Image 1 (cartoon, rainbow, N blue to C red):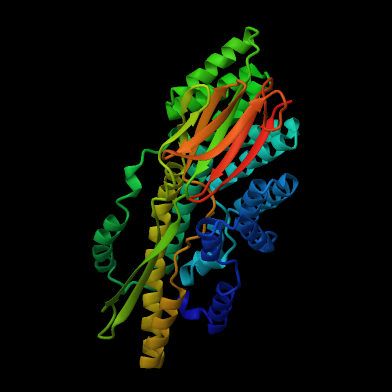
Image 2: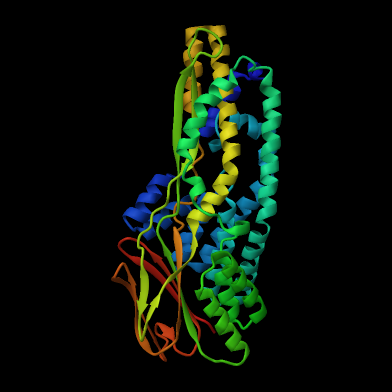
Length: 455
């Protein structure tokens, strides 16, 4: 099969791989280093109609800017991208598999990760709350939780498709690359892979692929709407996964309200830090696989960093002092999904590298040293890890709940005030006689806040 691939196809694939996309590193610098939220928003939305990743990030930034209608619009676009690409069962596509082997997965649209798709519905629900569209908020919270419940089936299907795809392509090319000593390749790879992926198993994944943030915030919303049965189910689910004792206090509030209690509360949702991001590590080494000519084996794989925490300790002072509690860590969520995909990524990369090594051999046999050099350059240029993912999600989610009282309140992080608000009858900030919600996105030098009192 490789022998019959024309140079035109190779150039076509290379051309596709070079198509322009937004600069993820530039967004990192604007959003985190310079805290330029408006500039970040203006930058990402330029690409929002052509790719899941940029539509998704446009939705988050529009939400943080308070542009809730546009946020929902961008999330609708990103959701359409996710559904379309997921529906293609793209792993089994012959062209995609061939192109991934010859070049890399980067030449295809980024399809989005499952945890990102869950956040689409989560942020759409929050945006709907801030425009008092509680009916839509209810729908989106339900969809976010339903999506999480379907995650086990999704990943089971992914694993099966990946396995079938690997087996099929291995069989298709086995005869053509029979000269490769796979043991020689594997022997050099095992120690390298073990060294680079030791961090992946250090985190306990949430049970059943469920992010406890989603049922928690959903449960609080349904509690404010007096839908006690649904709120009870969701809060209990969040507690069963996170084991956070504070959720039991929310369940106590629910029980009291069912019995007629009229006390009002304010829930504060804080997003802190930078979520784990992927980076590429490369393995480039020479091998003598077919003849006396040196063949270069190029392997590029993604890995995850540990994210970045901005502040460790959160507490709130008002009439009394409250401690914040971490309801969810995105480190666990991201690593969970990454670890599921990792075997497929490693195997595909090894197959790809073997094919490219064999291509070097074929070119050297037909053209000589120029063919060998050309094949080596092709292998090096086209060997890249797919490190795309959202860069503006937080690392951790912190929650507070306070009983309303007429007072000034101050939120501290690492013993410095980062935010303050007032609860009184005027409702200029928050209302004394209604439930309230505050959303806060924390950066190293500033915070973004959104406030809402439930009708």
